[in-house]
Amino acid sequence: MGETNGMSGSPAPLTPAVFHILLSLTDGPLHGYAIMQSVEKTAGLQMGPGTIYGSVQRMEDAGLLKDVAEESSVTASRERRRYYELTDGGREALAAEAARLARIADLVREKDLIPG
Image: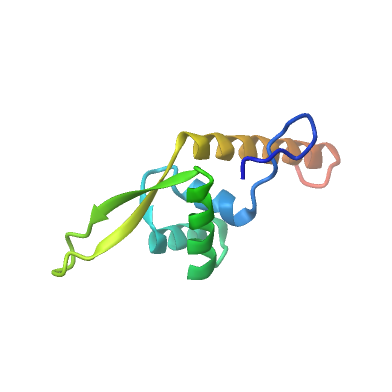
């Protein structure tokens, strides 16, 4: 993440998992299970814990999101949940990918493949 695609220095496309995880965090921090639910609701994609947590770890390593510790006030044991939020780099990557997808959608409309 953070690589270019070799074409005029454009950022490499994000995977669908990374794109939807970043998108789910635009409204604020979420824990892993809430990210899973958000992705399923908004994208119709079912991602298991391995996909979510593996992607989240790689995204954290790449500086796209960060862990913001929060204590759960719901449980008596005061269980710690890991909450994640976007970094500035994550917002930039998400915006670049959204712009790339918009250009593709425009091209598809120009070719009359979908109503415009």
